[in-house]
Length: 501
Image (cartoon, rainbow, N blue to C red; front, side, top):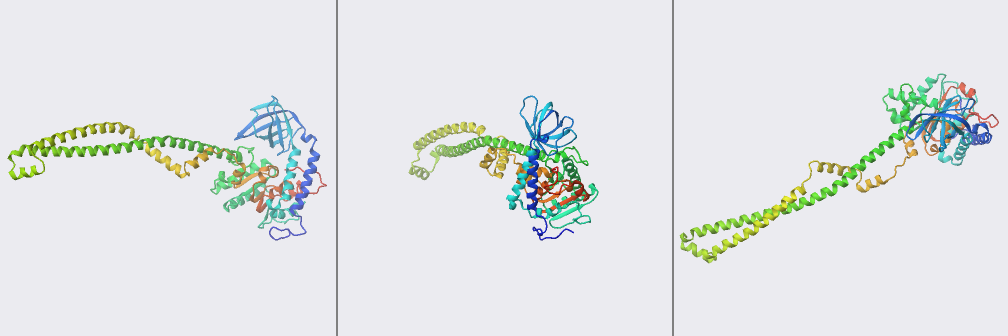
């Protein structure tokens, strides 16, 4: 039985993560010195290549090396085309024999021949050793508590030191041992679904990229069966080598494909926002001008109403004066004396009529001017039928987004493809353990749970490196018999150098 320990602190008689990290760092550094200058890092000439697939800014090339040549997966390399093009960097994802599949960061044409490939196995070992040294120097940043629970298991050579049953399960370290690979992966898929529903961030590591593709397909299919949108949760860090696994299009689950789609949508949204903002800026002065003209039109119409009111009053006075003159001789004496007392006699009434007519003429002149101005202002103040609703909708959107100042800042901001922020928001990331150890991106992201598929075929150094990124739990899965068969966990420096996959 595995010895028990308090949470985050292994028993004193067991190997700790720190001691294993130190041992493996020395192993990697010794291997780097051995590899430097050997055939493993010598240029390989007469290499033919063809483009297989492109996703976003990544490209998958198939390289045919001379017979007898091969490059291990996850080895970084440089491809030097034969036509004086600039070299491009890449990473070997897999292959068979002298044919390898390489993920590159720049396109170098549809096909080419007689290229030169320069592997950098020593660089991979140096980068991996440096990560282990960083973990030793910054234990608080990497949180080695869960890794301490893993360290004693990595010291086993046959698996007999572990439980003889199907595995163990604790709050920190869980092992799934079974002879059938399909059974193990189904259990991992069920566990992944449980962890996702518990809002955990999961790092899944595999010994190679073919295994990673297969595991992604199994997990995605299990999620589909329980109604989960696997495209939302699962992310395959490298380009997938297979198009489909178990009926699932795993190319769509690639980290680069997801990020490319996300930023493409972001750029499309930004372009749409720019169009809306420019249209808002275009309509704002137009409607402001229309509004001012409407205000002028309202003032002129008010003036017209006042002039018409005054003309009506004068016309009423003229009518009264004419009626009085027509009946003046027949008016009673008392009525005439009353009118004369107010200065209204025949002579003065004629004077009043002349004054009223003169005022009416002036008012009619002013009315003509007002009506002409109204005729000018009506088309100037008129707003097209659809313009006002369009402006109101745009204004509502501008206010919702924080106002024009905020939108100007959004539009002025440079498009920044932040890989760290994007991967930190992925719920389940699947890759190889050696990529986790050598890729600088993983030094800056953290996870809740580590799941190691086919763990006996993963060397102890990258397995420890992945374990240092998790806060809560480590899950080890595999066939216990493979621990001795692979011999990749033993960290004795005297042993022959292993394959760091």
